[in-house]
Length: 137
Image 1 (cartoon, rainbow, N blue to C red):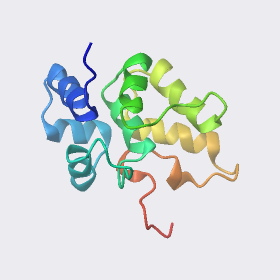
Image 2: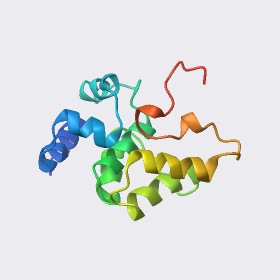
Image 3: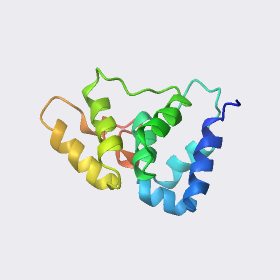
Image 4: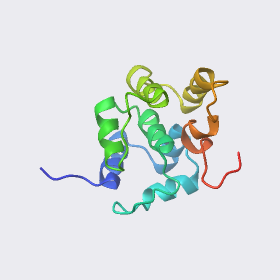
């Protein structure tokens, strides 16, 4: 069994959906620079730069991937959803139980769940609306 790279798996999933890059960006709430960063990731790079867990979860939710496929895709970038982390549990819930939810609606739910609980919302929101490196927010 050969292991796919992150890009191979992602673009295979996009192709299965029959989506253009523009459709993917719209459904996953990704801006062009963020998508370009994803397209040009070096699988061996230690830095993910603009490709955070939040961006990857947005891909999983926007593409309506099941939890198994989502975990495989995340693992190819060195991420995992921890059952001990409340934010990760919220992401898992969105993937498992909210198939078809828009990223805007997912972000609204995350805001309702975590607002006022000492969580910096920019660091948990999905897609390009989430935390940006170097941001003062």
